[in-house]
Length: 291
Image (tube, helix red, strand yellow):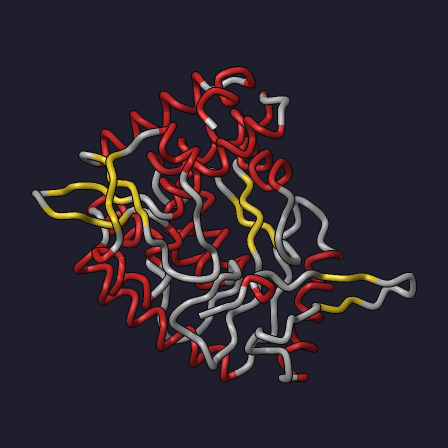
């Protein structure tokens, strides 16, 4: 699907202030100059953003709006079959439109009165402590670009579909928002990189890729799964294991293709209790034992 080297496209700013996004050869945008330049303009706007200000509006192209229309409509249909009840309830609250790509500022303005969370722009991948730490302030750092139109049904890069459909929906729910804030508070009190890495891995297998049992059926909670048309067709073919911190800490995960191993809670209450207990009890010493 994607080679390891194509996963994330770093943002570079030179001494003259010129911003570039570097695409590896395997990336679908590698030979697409207009897409590269468009991504660079979006990154430059994010780099110039001042915290607290609304996210800058992006002049999305008609091709990008078409990608959003196709993918968001397909996802909404798949959510009715596979998404957990709490996600569907949150989706009704955020009520994302399918006819065009929303601006990040619009989405943020809709979420804030519901849970106090805001979405701010990120130029690209954010360092672990910075990304998770900002959640303690009920602030989520989100990218504003959208995946290349040649591969609309899966993206290893966290684009607007992932950020808005997945995490934006989560953050419209008070239950989810409380967990995100607790993740931020936990990372801010941890000192060791090992402990932060353990939190990140548990985040991956719960917030990003978590499953729950609901009425005897396996349902999806995770933002990454719920923003990938392709993976929503595959996830039941993965090896599904019970929630377990030590197992999550040991389990390798893939970014460039579908996950071969997923973890499932017994209910959303169990999902919530498991994550809350882990986050309130993990410390620098216990992380070394669990990892």
